[in-house]
Image (cartoon, rainbow, N blue to C red; front, top):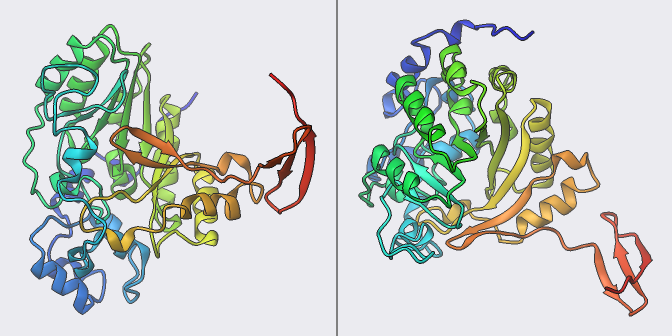
Length: 374
């Protein structure tokens, strides 16, 4: 029988202390790294949210400006370069520029984004413990250029009225920034809706602030219920996976919460075969299921993170499929206003001669199988 073993850093009040002590000034940042001129210039010049927890800041390399954790959370003047980013991207991406594309005449609440007929993304906050510079929702979360009203009760009422919705994804900001009381209210409210079948939570907080996975939160999430909770964390580099991460994932799994990973292919951070493979092997080693890796979206200000579209498929072809266990293979996709579009390696069927198919393995070996008519 599993019994929760509380570490000192999982005591009540520890996660709130991480948030209160957020590293969000140059003076605080100097305690962790030697700041480069570009980093200092960006912090002083760019009028947008930035910051991270003391725990996550401790993962940065003090003297290496190319440290992946540094690049993912510290502003850069490269954010002013915008060749491919689309202004007002979040409005377009989440179909906010018009009424519901599924035939609804009414306007959805700001808290509800819809790309599929049977599921919605439910935004319940716009704050995070750590602000990722590549965030596709940066117009609402980091830049604050897009003024949206994330009213939880308004969103709950919309979901209750739409009986075709069976799956609700809680997002933000970071959902785990809410207090235990508010999370309990939200989960209980969703589970009281008869047509819901599952709840998903997308969060980076177990990674940037593992202190948040407390006994009281596990009690809220892990209650036995017909409507299960699935969690997807956001990990993009193996450096983010520590012993604390191993501990909190173990805790979540033992309370009945399945944990997957959704990451982003980031130029100069994880877009080489060695790092990409190590990331997915290390995810499995702490019992996180690789789920999605996304092409970096067309939000403004993230051009310097965006690799070529085909890069993700190439990394799976050259570093995962056949090169390591199949459990390590994520789905590579482009996320669009009409949903996710998978872009997986195409190296199986190389030709059809009418009577047989020519196939090619991950090593480039060829073989043939017979053509089977319908």
